[in-house]
Every structure is written in C-alpha cells, then in structure tokens.
Length: 218
Image (cartoon, rainbow, N blue to C red):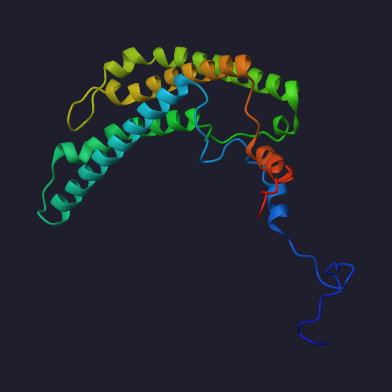
C-alpha cells in the first residue's frame, strides 16, 4: 500500500478526498464569545474602574520589578541585602492582583462558563445576563462584608522584616471585592436599561451573513 493512501478509518468526501477543517468550523466551536480581549466596558463605572485598575496593576508591576532587581543585584553581586527590596514585592503583590482582577471584571475578560447562557436569544438572553450579574453583585457584596471582619486582626499584625502593618497588604483584597461589587451592580443596571451585548461569535456570524452591497462602477 502506498504511504499516502488514506487509512480505512478516515472519512472521505464525495470526491474521495479527506474532509478539510476550515476556519468556519473552528469558529463554530468557539465558546468564548463576549469575552474577547478587545471587549470594552459598557458603562461609565466599569470604564473608570478599568482605568484605575490598569494604573494600579502597571504601577505595582513596575515597582515590584525594580525591587526584585535591586534585591538580586545586592544579594549576588554585593553579597548584601536591602530590607525594603526583600519584603516590598511580597507586600505589593496583592495590589497587583487586585488591579488585574478589576480590569478583567470591567472588560469581561474573566473566565466564564456560558454554555447555557450563550445559547439563549433575545429577551431570554438579556434576562439571564441580568440575573447572573445581580447574583454576582450579591455574592461579592457578601464577600466584602465577610472580609471586613478580618480588619481588626490584620491591623494588629505587622510584617516580619519592615514592620509594616499587614492590613496595608490585605487591604488589597477588601478593596478588590468592594470595587468588583460596584462594578457588577453597575453592569446589572446597565443591562436592565439597555440590554446585554450580543456575544462576539453572533456578531461575527451576523456580519458574515449580511449581504454585501455592490459599489456602482466597480
């Protein structure tokens, strides 16, 4: 048998050739609609949160990189250490995470299981999105309420090297869940007033199915 012959288990098309998976086939399997990187906040509250979260994440990353670099140079080149460079990155890292989480919430870049919701259409899709974000608002609000109980014990603790209050680092979590609560509530109100945006794969399919207009004289 020739090495190029098709295996017996390979399906063949009507003309005898093996089927080819096209870009359209791959797009049909894509379930990430509505969570693309190019998504933008739909309401002013999430737009402001995305800007502030981006600045916080970028600033935190830059400071952490500088401190880690200084720590490495001092340790392996000068055989010494700088306390702030040793403990600073650990202290600031929660704020970096908080900024990234706020941006992901604002731009709908978070991980979502939308197998059922993405198959709904029209008013059913809008209602499902509104109920989902209303539930997220309540859940995050309750999480903020629980996190507030940890403020007194965290305020009584300090870091082992610099003696900074642990609340300054743990506060990132409280701020994060509080801001995300406001974001989710704002998105719920926005969807209730203006409807939820269609998933990206539906927008792309509608654009592809739209008839193209011929330009006169072309």
